[in-house]
Image 1 (cartoon, rainbow, N blue to C red):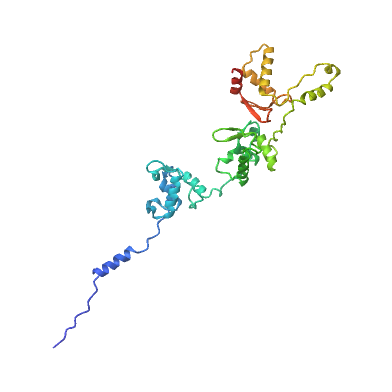
Image 2: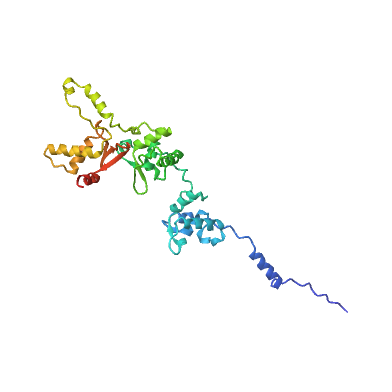
Length: 336
């Protein structure tokens, strides 16, 4: 009797074990690397959403973004919203430009992809331009930061252009100048005036600070303001008498009069100009008075040190500080 041997069993692919193993292999396989950002698209968009711009700073294509799973993206997103780039109920969807995010990235020292706008600001930076001294020397007062730039022979327009490499000495000098605005500093007696949260000073005041700090200045920079000492009124008549004694004999017989010193108030100058106009039978209007005050700038017997477009700069006698007399201030003095 013949014995029949059964053929070997063929494995089946659809069993429960093989199906589970195949599913596990597919689930746990390594994800393919995500493609980089489509720079040819993003660089030509005028504005993007904030979260898209932050994703691009991380080198992530927003189309394949995995949300907050990327810790670096989450941290940068929080910083961007905290610095005011995100607004409204949905701050992450605020429309921004890539340059806005680039400025934040430079301030926060983020590492950016080389394709990101402004990723390497110093790569194409230019040397700062020299200033146009024909313009700046005729400006009566300027902002403190612009004055510090001129002390380094840098045109102030380079500070806001973003295309010029500003030396570290600029920040150093600016910090020192701000400290000298405090009581006891070189600029404490003339801290200028406030204009839109900035300090406005004269170049002569900055030159005096430069001499104190031994800063090198361009040859075109104005000379420092002279240090004016208060004149002793008791010794003034004696000095006037000595000056009168050196006059001609005819002048010696004339009565000695006390001359005006540089500590006299600006009101004396105004009264003299008004009296002069009345002698000419002219009506003393503020415009005529201001014109004559400007003519007195720089005279030895006048407290007016210099003139500018809107008025004059005069020296206060009690402390030697320069003061501004504008047209509106003159008008209020004349009609008060």
